[in-house]
Length: 383
Image (cartoon, rainbow, N blue to C red):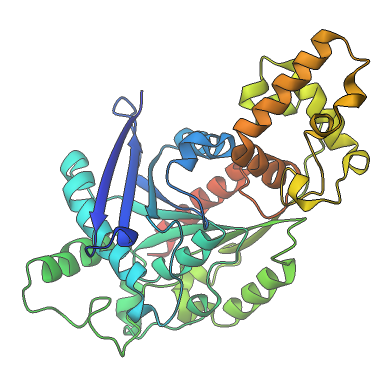
């Protein structure tokens, strides 16, 4: 049994600057570590997509299996401002401030400890994760279909080296961000210019955390070279950017997700709506496996942006189905209706997990989560 707590924060009297914090935990689970995975979605996506999209639910299933608390954060605008300088970024400051507040009012009140923070970002959310990982004590981040934020990954912090080294210790870092800076700000005492956003001319940034990049092989927007060039540049200055931990050879990883070798059986895992509808899976398998036969030059009739395929092909040409039995026609209509109803979620599965284009993937997320466990062990050994 899971509990979902939804908290809305408002930075100004403008509905576009409202933020949803959607928190899931299982009160019956014995969490061995208090680890919180923060989810930042892409443009046009909402917090609820993780719970309603098929691919979103698979991502959550992985996180539950690895015993993470789950916190999805999203803006009413359904996007994040990633403009720099970071000190002037209103989205970053609002999320930073509200997360401090949320940790104290929701998480600490319930669990009497501060959580260790991790980030999973998708597309625009990966870009924004690059900003937030420099002003929060992030232990590690997973960046999907966008290579974090180039400039923030390469910007040195102005903290003294000994203090920067201390921030690699999650106990000290949590104290600094969630006690020292929190009480300075919310109690309106003598605000210390050593905290983020208090000195606009200084880069008082957290060390760059270990980062796991997930690139989709058929992504037409982001190329592999964007990741490799960034990793090479960061490695040149890894110790200054993130200390001994980031300087470790395993701390920057690039995983390239290839297309799935689709079989009729494997499709049952991806389309929950068709688990008891073998006829629907059969129609999709026919369309996906013979994509050249079902191309449509009219972009408006393409079901998903990543492929020039009309997965409801026979709906446009009913004369082709006249020789079918009544049962076959009914089954095809049922299949086509499901695609219409679940089109957005359907296309995230097709483009991300199957074809591996620019969409949300869930496949092999366990590799990234295993890597985070490895980074936790390396961090413990290095402090």
